[in-house]
Amino acid sequence: MGHQTKNRKSESGNVLFLILIAVALFAALSYAVTQSTRSGGGSADREQAILSGASMTQYPAALRTSLIRMILSGTAATELEFNPPSGFGALTTTAQGVFHPTGGGAVYQRGQADLMAGNAQGTWHFNAEFVVPDIGVSTAVTGNDIIAFLPNVSQTVCESVNSEFAIDTTDCALQGSTAVPTLLSASATADVISVDMENGYAFPGAPETLEGNDSGGTCAAFAGQPSGCFYDGTNNQFVFYSVLLER
Image (cartoon, rainbow, N blue to C red; front, top):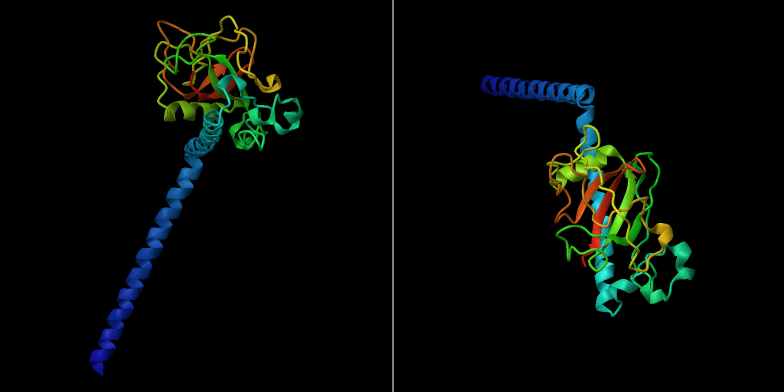
C-alpha cells in the first residue's frame, strides 16, 4: 500500500513538473511574440507584402492559360482584345475577347486593395506597346510583347516582387533608397495589338523597350525577366508588369 502511495506521489510530481515546463515555454513564446510585435513590425509588413505579391503574380499566370487556349483555337495574337465586361459591346467578335465567356473565358478582376498604394482596388492594364529585352524577339513593334500592368502598387509590394524575382539593379537609377529601377522613357510606339485602350497602360514618352534608367552603366534589370516592378517617374507610381505572351 505504501509502495502505491509512493508511486502516486512520484507521478504527481512528474505531472507538476511537466505543467511548470509548459507554463515556462508558453511564457517564453508570449514574450517572443510581444517583442516581435513591438520591434518587428517591418518584418510583418514584408511578410504580408510577400503574400500579397504572390497572389498578384498568380492572376497573370491564369490569363496566360486563356491566351494560349485562344491562340491554339485559331485566334491570332494580333486579334486578342482585353475589353472588360462593361466593354464587351465594342469587341470585334466575342471569340476575340479574352474575358468574354465565348472567347478566352478569363476572369476579369481588379487589383486587390492590399496590393495598392492607396489601399483601394487597382485596375489591370493590357497592351503590346513594349518590348522586354531577351523575352521573345527584342525588336520594337514586331517583337512587342503582350503585357499585363498593375499601376500604383505599394512600394513595399514592389520591392518584395523584385526581391522574389531577383531583379538585378546594378547600374540602374533607383527610386530613392528602394530596390526599384526607374523606367527609362523613350519614344512611344503605336499599339500593334487590338486592346481596349481605356485599359491600355501608357504615359507620356512611353518607351519602346521596357528597361531601367542608367545611372552609371548599362541597366539590365528587366532583361529576360517575364515579371517585375518599376517606378514610373512620369506618373509618380510603382508599376508591376507581367508578360502574358512573348513575341
